[in-house]
Image 1 (cartoon, one colour):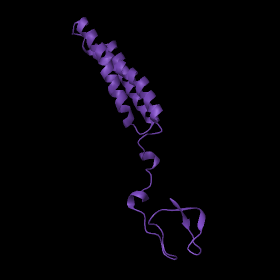
Image 2 (cartoon, helix red, strand yellow):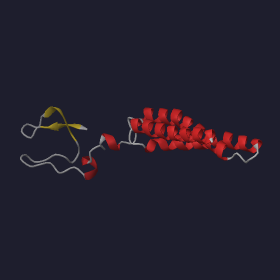
Image 3 (cartoon, rainbow, N blue to C red):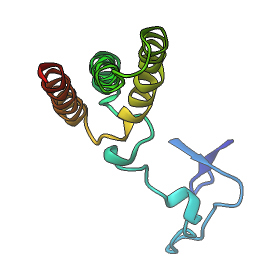
Image 4 (tube, helix red, strand yellow):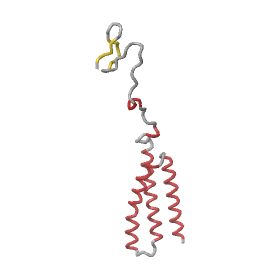
Length: 136
């Protein structure tokens, strides 16, 4: 790029640079920029990388495991008629898919606090159901 020249004397104006094809006559407005160049950056709430990703990740990892263990316990209580060998394998292998499903879907929460509250409430509900079934 070359330095922009002053219309009067043809001297370079300090601190400015001209791009090819952007010189305008004195007293006229420069041509409008293309629509792509005018587009403003997305607002903070619409960015791809949310600022809540750490909180959501921790909620999915910690409370997701608690929720998966609770679901596994409820299934174990409901499958009382199934032989112990099969039931043990079923509930053992059920933990990982439930945990990973919760862990992957935790990013649909709008904020990290909502993820913690939502998963905490779901975990409390599932564990309450587990203890209620156990008491029967």
